[in-house]
Amino acid sequence: MTLANGRPYLAIPGPSVMPDRVLAAMHRASPNIYEGALHDLVASLWPDLREMAGTAGDVAAYIGNGHAIWEAANANIFSKGERALVLATGQFGLSWAASARAMGIEVELLDFGKSAPVDLDRVEAALRADRDGRIKAVLTTQVDTASTIKTDIAALRAAMDATGHDALLAVDCIASLGCDEYRMDDWGVDVTVAASQKGLMTPPGMGFIWFSEKARRATKGADLRTPYWNWEPRADASEFWQYWAGTAPTHHLYGLREALTMIVHEEGLPAVWARHDCLARAVWAAFDGWSQGNPEIAMNVADPAHRARAVTAARFGAPHATRLRQWCEGKAGVTLGIGLGMAAPHEPAYHGFLRLAHMGHVNAHMTLGALAVMEAGMIALDIPHGSGALAAAAGVVAAGA
Ligand SMILES: *Cc1c(COP(=O)(O)O)cnc(C)c1O
Image 1 (cartoon, rainbow, N blue to C red):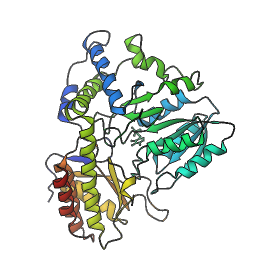
Image 2 (image 1 turned 135 degrees about the vertical axis):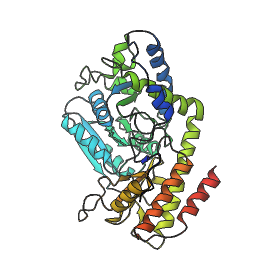
Image 3 (image 1 turned 90 degrees about the vertical axis):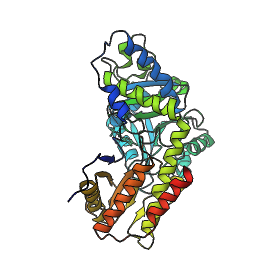
Image 4 (image 1 turned 180 degrees about the vertical axis):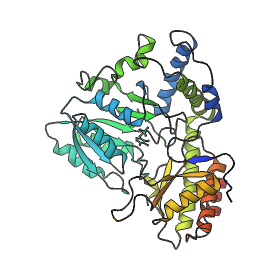
């Protein structure tokens, strides 16, 4: 028998859970795109998007997912043959590097592996070695969604500044925006990219770039900047269509308006960060409990200081991760994330890792429910695990609330 027939919970790191209010806001007839209410709605989004990233700088929006927004950033920052220093702490830095390389950008890759944070000494050394200033920008993720490593962006900026190198800092916040604390201007970030379908609680299909005045000046005339990707008219449109380089993503805009109202105006960004922090720590407490005496089970990031608040990756020992995911979805209606790019060379695909997302429209009963379902699955499948995990998670919620 199955106990999955209720409201399903997609606990993967994107697309995330969409609030009913966001869905309801999108359920309407097509609006006039030439004048009227839609124009006012778009004008109201820009200040809230700035607040999301913590910047007084510019923001440009695109119809496209995270992969599109990487290309948008590449096209606006670089000319062909210029160099990017890309920091990889899992999968997503590698993918950003690949997209840059394919566009004719020279890529210097610092790969820190699958479970270690950025080594700032190596970043400093790479910048100091660049005596003729060929590195135009450092590209990094705030949270790598596969490894679930978080990069300390303020510390990275300080390390860059210590070298005297004038490279721009561009940060992929696709997984982390609206989950992990982020302060673009305070931390000296020049370019930030994000997408709609994770912390922003809106369907996949929109991407955003925030850029500083310094970034605008340093990238003037970048020759990879084709008309569609050019961030200038999108950030400062003299005609409405220029925001999108064509037809507006009408229904996404209604959904995004509702999501930003919930995040920025109702709950408030600091409370949103605090909620994600508490839920993340509840998840970590559960994993700590399950891994007691069971080295097969372990969070991928050992040091809590380097863990994301949006999603947690854990090793379960092949094939337990896959069996557990299948059980949770089929028997209890909770879909866990696959382990992305985490398998050791001798392991089949991703059977040894899984991810539990706690990003976006997620509250205590959802996270505690997902954890309890996972424990039920471990019992049903005879997966050895330590005791006291759920009590520990409940304790974190009790203390946090
Ligand atoms: C999800 C994600 C991407 C890719 O976004 P898509 O919308 O799937 O193209 C890139 N970077 C990070 C950090 C992500 O979490």
